[in-house]
Each structure stands twice: as C-alpha cells, then as structure tokens.
Image (cartoon, rainbow, N blue to C red; front, side, top):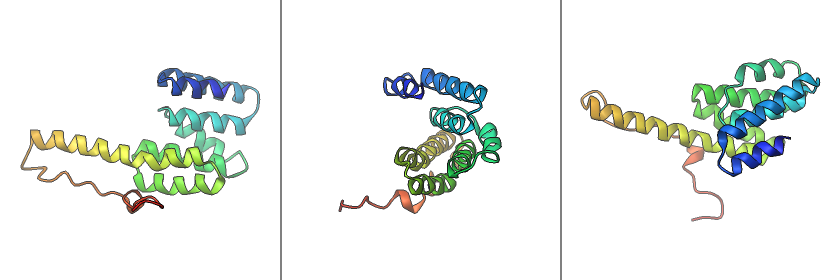
Length: 149
C-alpha cells in the first residue's frame, strides 16, 4: 500500500501521496504494527506532513534506529534545522536507507532557498534592515561530490 503513495508522488500528485501515506500509517496503527507505522509516517513527512509528535511517541516504543531517526527528521523539518537534517541524513545512510539519506540531505538547500527568497522580499521592503542576503550553508552541501572536479 505504501508503494501507491510513492507512485502518486512520482506522478506529481504530492497531496494524494501524502493522504495515501497517512492512510497506511493509520492502518498500521490499527493493526498494531508500530514499526510499519513509523515507515509510513516517515514517508508522509517526506511528502509534507507534520507528523513529528506521533513519530516522537513511536520512537519511545519501537526498537531499532528508524523510529528515532525518523522522529528527528520530522522535528528538524518543522524547525527548519539544516544542521540537524545533515546529521539525520548521515544516520539514514548508516542504516542503509539511501533514499531517506538523500531526501534529508537535500532539505537544507530548500530551507536555504526559502530563507533567501524571504530575505530578498524583506530587502525590497526594508533595504536598510536587510543589507545582505547571506545565508549560512552547512559545509557538507558545498563540497563537490566525489568523482567530480
């Protein structure tokens, strides 16, 4: 069932993907499968859901690293914490979940882009208050990828 959420996302229907992932999480909760609920909620969060509270609760009940890392991922997204997203990306990579690792690694650039857009808007409105649109970027996201020069 979670695959249907991914198919919807691949087709560009993110709101439908989010709804499907949440439905899978609800079904998993009803069936007493908290580990699968964690995976479904992590997927829903990746599609834009705000499931940090439920993931934090599950992190205290589910064994294994995914629940805790997924809860940190959701909380970092809600907080717009790029450094924490970078750390979460590394944790997902250590777990072998490369899709989640790449997703978490890409999020700070979206946060930075959003901050830059906000600052450009603010600079037009109050040029004396916002003289620069400088946004700090985590060093991991400015290094060239291995194999490229």
